[in-house]
Image 1 (cartoon, rainbow, N blue to C red):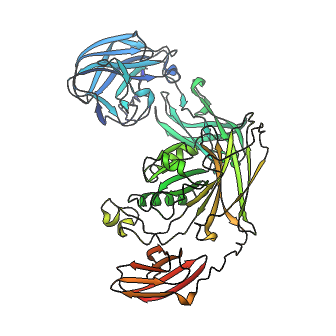
Image 2 (image 1 turned 90 degrees about the vertical axis):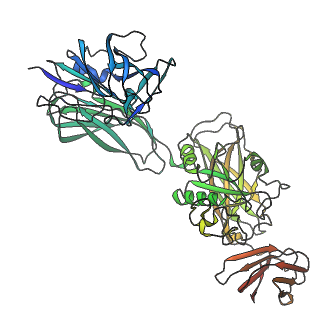
Image 3 (image 1 turned 60 degrees about the vertical axis):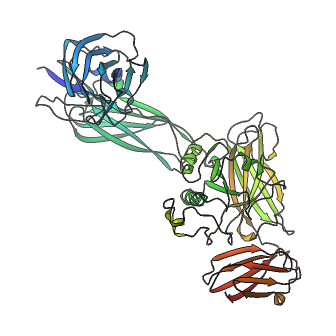
Length: 606
């Protein structure tokens, strides 16, 4: 008895009659239309050899074409590949209507199973959006020759073309497996999931089949009991362990179908390589952000970096670099400034990720992080820091490569950052929701006074391009050491909240290869000198909204005003022996004056 089946490359099944005819398309039914008005196009779908060979000895007798708009001067083509200059079958169609057009081939196409089959149609469309396509994207189902422009393109989905195959040589107990691709395991993963799709491309129902999953020569059989009618698919997910570094050859094969050998073994096996990297070489991502309290959109940078630290606490390292008229700026006159970085920025907020990718620290940062995380890396670094008795910080780094490097060109730098900085007002263009919601910043004032600044750069020691490392050949997994002493800048306000970030830099490109952030261990030496502030001799007087502060040796002291909840609402640096401050505040407040860790607090009603 003659059997027939509809062939498509991806299953979207609908039974047509009791003789197991089914519809299998690249994606779902027509979702939309593609193409310009007054254009001529020739869309194709391709059936690769590994799929079509099991139908050798049968014939394509009918083709269905789905259109969103009518077309004229239609032709049907069959080729081995869409790009082939010569067709192997052509049939004039004339006008094609909107919807599905069923074309009976004047001469059925005999399937040899030895070559690909590409099926396409040419049509002239007066209206735009004429080519019917599914939103599901499949490479073999989306090739378009744009005749009007003499170029190849695609719809972005899957073209709606179907082919009916009939004959007496329909395969029995025949299954095909989808491809799997080479993968690199994420550093934090203990296993990597693989997904394969096994499809019944025979003419009979599959009730059971078995797979052999092989990893580096060790196989495990998996029996699946399913009720898969013709062209139905089954999705199989399996895990490959990735705890031990190395290269793993992974393959999946269909072994038995309904207890018998698969009809065509040529399309039964798929394989790939899984690379598991040494976790010591996990790339930590450095994000250098250009910001400032003068920048009204920089609150989104603060939000973006905090979200990234929360999502990737072990691999995301932010460095917030203030510029302009900002009390947290690093003087450009120092040898540890970020002037070179600031000059490279196009504005604020703005960030560089490992000095390789740039963008917005809120809108782009997650995408940039993922791109850089997935890039190849061969350098590891371990950094530690501790306090010296003289108040300096001793830093030690161990760096190594997982490959031999004959002519290394590397440098190293250390960035000192400080957390928990308060007392400065941040310009806030999100206040009142005038630029949308921004994680609560829309509820703050402009400027926002209750802000805590974290990851603030106090200096990059060794310079922005770093200190050159030895150029002798590096041998794989050999540990090399670098030591440095940081002189803590006077801008640091709280030594308990410091971090040191060691960074290995490619001295040719200035890109950061890897980094590590560490806190400073040990007791902080108490080297604060009594500069002669007479705590009892500071006088504060208020009149008509003006506050007068007088006292000996208060020049250079930091003064802040906090509300009863401890939130800083005003801050400044005192100069000379007398300061007049216009606060424009009313109510109960606390005034804190600090210099070299000597603090005096006052309660006052304004």
